[in-house]
Amino acid sequence: MKLSRSIRWIILSLITGFILLITYQFALPRLFIPRVAVTSQMSLIHVGSNDSFAITPDGIQAGRYMLEMLANNNRSAAQKAVAIYDQIIPRENYGGEYSALRWFAQLFLMSNQEKQKALQDPFVASFYDFFADNNFANLKEYVKRKYLLQQDEDQLTEAGRNRAIFLEDFILFNNPTREAWEQTSKVLAAIPVSPGQTIADIGSGPGYYSTRFSQKVGVKGQVYSIDTVQQHLDYINRYIQRQDITNITTINSYPGTTIGLEGKQVDVAFMCSLYHNIYGMSTAPDRDSFVQSIKAALKPGGTLVLVDNGLVEPGQLPYHGPYVAKELIVHQFRFYGFKLKQEYAFIPQRYVLIFEKV
Ligand SMILES: C[S@@+](CC[C@H](N)C(=O)[O-])C[C@H]1O[C@@H](n2cnc3c(N)ncnc32)[C@H](O)[C@@H]1O
Image (cartoon, rainbow, N blue to C red; front, side, top):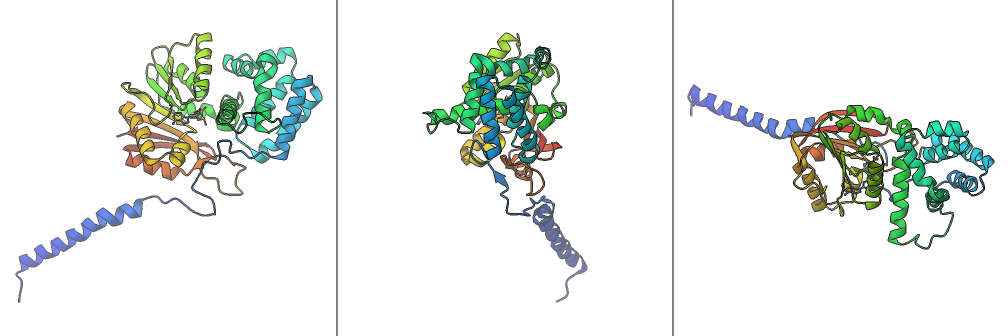
């Protein structure tokens, strides 16, 4: 049977259209989906324990010297602690707590004049006071809990663990030398927030970024410091009261299944060193609720900035902390309705992702 020419054209066009449709719908997207490289035995996500930095013999020894320095005003112990930290910071690079402890030992060795200069910045002075008050009670407690140098009655209770996590987050994230390990000023410069705008610092901890955002948005702007741990928020409240800062509001979002901003709108939502936890530890409904609450709080076209640690292949860097492969986050947020606009890496293990709510 002979088909007329026009019918043959119609059939050919339909077949070609069908092939193009299949290619466009299925084959092309698959081709262009970026892949996460699995090139070693490493997991694509690692949350670890809440204290995910290993406790090494050198760290314990330095901790003992710190306690000796504090208990007996012992300069030689301070020098020995500094010498150990100088060695283990480049070798072990366990986050920032070693560099914070070294800062305390160095401060101890300074003349009064040098010390006054080192404590000029009110944020740094407030950090110092927190640990130094009451004959260095909090610093001693931190070192003892961290390096298990004393049997605390509550060591195995939830309250004891929460206290240890609070002190660890406090010393790590308000560390006066954080700039050196995180290049914080570059992170801040990359965040598109301007005077008069509103920004949510989700998982603010003791307020390192919140207080810097407060300066960026100015008196007409607003910062929401959001956390599930009241002790961090209490510290921020005391600090802003003393410094007469009027544009920071703290919000306790416990249990953390939303960001606690119901009914409020922000230009920018910022999350630093938190999402690996949400990604790895939440149930799917809790994670949905958390991300949807960010979406609901963001103004149309608003910005989400997500800072976290990425994968570091063995042998490249002494990085042992929690991480989540960047690609997992980028794609998950795409499905939540966020478009990646920019990305940066100011230090090798840390990415800064800038999304737009679409
Ligand atoms: C690792 S600290 C980072 C602190 C801060 N973002 C910084 O970079 O300086 C993570 C903080 O998130 C808080 N957090 C944990 N889960 C949370 C949740 N679901 N919602 C809000 N904050 C949470 C913790 O209490 C902790 O203070």
